[in-house]
Image (cartoon, rainbow, N blue to C red):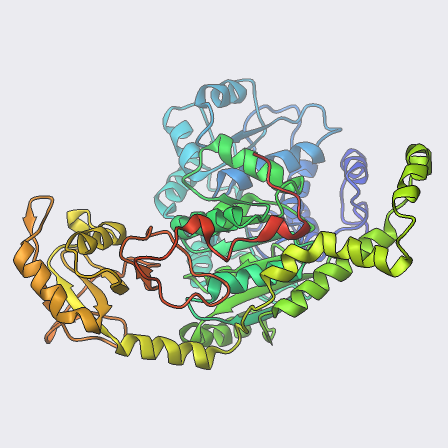
Length: 602
């Protein structure tokens, strides 16, 4: 492998890289840097996340930059605020000894006036998100007429996020003579479209194979049902006492729900998604980088700017809607030479997607078994014993207390002392997992679900999402009819103008009679309830009439008539929820004391 000097970088840049601990260029840097320095031809570069893409495009720009020219010479676009800030900070580190080089980062959620003032002072390099960049161009605060380099980092994601119009406007503001540099971790059709529309006969370089996963990452999948998905997630975390992970979810709502559950159950966790303010996002990411937070639950977009090299795990709570994004997710671990594990939780319907991903990453998934309670307790216990064994004793600090301690423990022999120590630390955990079931027995789980479904009657109701109906309100409406003391409510499907719900077959006639006699209304609209045909496929029918609309996700579990809509199934199997079930504050699936983890900061 070449050195940074051999690939054409000058002494001040190499000195800054040495300060940062960079010794030799990565594969993508070794290929891209000399190409950019020696040629003004457009470039497509493909490399996995964490292989040094930022340095691959920024170092040759710094090498060729005219330091005495205060015009904007390079514009670098990234899809998210976090990634833009990260790139800007990295470039500032690289040009530490290039005193005349100035970098400005522009993005939404921060003061535009401050960014305009920085641009007026002169910046040769501007890093920005597409939206804020266009705003500054429209205000004539950002002039790109002298740009020599346009960098599109994670260009496929910018298109996925709907920034095509902004990209077009930025391109219009740059001269035709510029060099366009496209960097991406994946190679979907969108990237080909970008190359065709925005680039001229580009050269292509790759680090490894396009879209392939990192060799430092192993890929595992765990078979779950919707009932066992969250308990399985907890057990995987519990099996790894020193876990430092990102859990990826598809939606903001799913992200917040999973994070809230983990926090309530004693895990050192937090969420990262688009509904957070910039200050909140910065706070969460700062804590995660410092490992104050061990588990971060995030959406794909929010995690794009999170640069952490020591992640032990990436866990896919659900697979991404766009399969190519799996490469981005898994690439968050196994970085900087470290080993990592990418885990996917899949139900039977989702398993087929794994074959598609295997073709993309050119690696095989290994099926894992959800850990049993015994395995978790043993692993946690041995981890604690290892830590005790490795603890260095500071005799100078504790010497004065030892005589009293020895005196209190004098009647205990070695075996008794060890037993008491272990019991003190693990009695709660041992009790928690004492009667835990095997979550891998999906045949029994699915059979029970089918049997339960056969005991339910499916009802049509003529109100839906457009009436501001949600599962909690529907449960309340049903409960208000006083159908029975212990009715069981099954799956709920909230559609646009009507909905479906299931009730224990034994209360079929009582349900119809109650709604008919009470003639309830919902926000002034008369409510009509009828029995409808039950669909095994999950869709709803009223007789033979097809219903259209998205299922209001996450409400297919059994729930009680008066319970909270956010109540979760317990790890120990749960069974059916009934209206006389205790409140969630006494639920049996609460994680005891964090199992040795640090508590989350308040």
